[in-house]
Amino acid sequence: MSSLGRLRLITFDVTNTLLQFRSSPGKQYGEIGALFGVRCNNNDLVTNFRSNWQKMNRWYPNFGRNSALMEWHQWWRQLISNTFAESGSPIPEDKIDSFTKHLLELYKTSSCWQHCNGSVDLLNYLRMQQQLGARENARGEYPFVMGVISNFDPRLPKLLVNLKIDHFLEFALNSYDCKVEKPNKEIFDMAMRASNLNDLKPEQCLHVGDGPTTDYIAAKSAGWNAALVHEKNANYLTAKYGEDKIDASFVFPSLYDFHRKLATNSITW
Image (cartoon, rainbow, N blue to C red; front, side, top):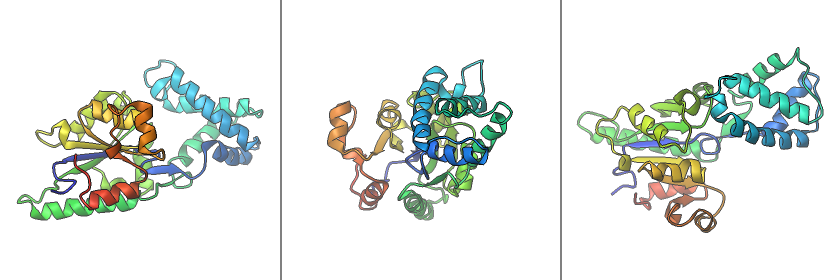
């Protein structure tokens, strides 16, 4: 039986699974800051972006979705402002709104994002399998559908269009609009409903991502199959999270390796 045999829904994480930053956000911020006359050491920006990202996620999870104090674009405004201020060059108050808007628009495009190695090849392979299955189906239906589940803000659909991978996907769920983030089971249930597949069961679903907790363990906890694409080897991950949480058989060093094992029917879900 094909490795895809019983699967009816395949979903992907986005950041560091299908798409990745061209350069670290801190470095990119420095380049844009220079255009606005705000100059910082890029290494400081990288460090302070990371620390502010962690603080903002802790204080106002899911881009401030459940906070009465801010909406998602205001969440980014505060993160950007704090990152530059802590790097020694505060953005002038009369420039912060236009600066934030410029960055938010830029991060919808291929100026800041690129495809992860192997992602387009994998999506093309899966599309070919869909088409082959449709030819064998009396109704001409795809044997499975594809979608995205991502902890992301509402810019996600436009980003997928701009990076030219939206046509592979039946749906794209972002956590902000869903009002719930991975690893919450509810967002996986939403994906099942978004697939529009009748009588779909969790064991017929597969989620592919790079997050041990937010992707792999979360999907397994929802009753789904899961594939973890991660730079750390399987032994390291199973030792860290426990063999009962992560099965080494479903850890892949790259999308290329995952693709190859799918194509050679080397995976049994």
